[in-house]
Image: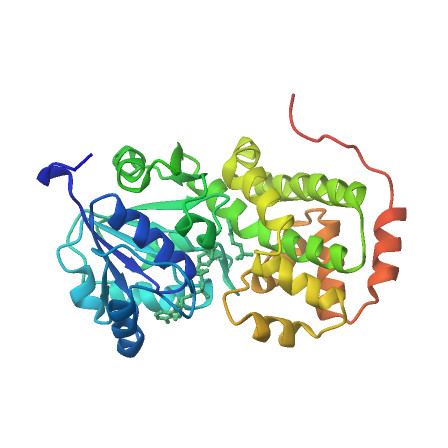
Length: 341
Ligand SMILES: NC(=O)C1=CN([C@@H]2O[C@H](COP(=O)(O)OP(=O)(O)OC[C@H]3O[C@@H](n4cnc5c(N)ncnc54)[C@H](O)[C@@H]3O)[C@@H](O)[C@H]2O)C=CC1
Ligand SMILES: O=C(CO)COP(=O)(O)O
């Protein structure tokens, strides 16, 4: 059904990688005026000519109305909504660049699943620090970019303390194949999206070592317990971790080699160095920095996170994987379910 002219939104999506492209394509397909910011003009021009982002989503034809823009100021000019899909290590730099370019009241939504290294700042908190007079939200869920552009059914979660954001985003993003739920727990939704990447590295490594389905089920369940315990200490709502942004994305990312984090873990499990594995993947592998920052935060807060400690020991302390697994399996027995009843 065609949108009325009042409901057509001008939307800028910042980040011409896999997820930015997939999200911008949904928005354009839904009839909104979507512009995708790709900072390199040669790549933007290639996308205009081929209607394909060959580097990140080869073989997918993008919507004919999706515009590609290499000038950031032009891209965000007049937009009601700005979506940011930039890897966490460059997120603040882009937030600084966009600061001052947005009209008052713009809705700014982060889709980035990472934590700033050193400061333990989530991406929406960076937006709070860098942007004035905007309404902030996050989007997170089980959402492989390649499946989204291929119209596979999925759902995601928008989280914000602004009712306007919770109401507007489902209207702009939802389609017959992409459903958006809402949650007021912005911190929990965002933290869940970042944390699950750590456990995807672990399950990728476990797969490389030949682990079976019993092992996978155990790791997934203990990962959920560990994520929730950490989130609870930081003030997030543990129920958020039972939703799409928590258990939904954990299952997706930890069970599929479409996940870059899973693939990095698999490569290390097969004996490759972490640096080589990340470099071969050639795209964002957020879990590596998230692991470092979460390990240090857990130590500081005294939160029990045996899987995080084990992965850190393997990746950054040259510990032998088999001996770490032995320690995990023979550690002091603990309670299974820790949630309040
Ligand atoms: N790919 C996926 O399926 C999903 C990814 N995400 C999250 O989205 C975020 C972005 O991931 P992807 O798009 O997959 O990464 P990607 O590696 O595919 O693309 C990243 C893009 O950001 C651009 N970029 C990097 N630094 C920049 C800077 N300083 N200025 C301008 N552009 C810059 C790169 O040129 C590239 O186009 C990550 O946090 C990821 O966890 C979330 C859901 C799904
Ligand atoms: O977050 C994702 C899907 O929801 C993508 O996971 P990777 O970054 O591990 O590819």
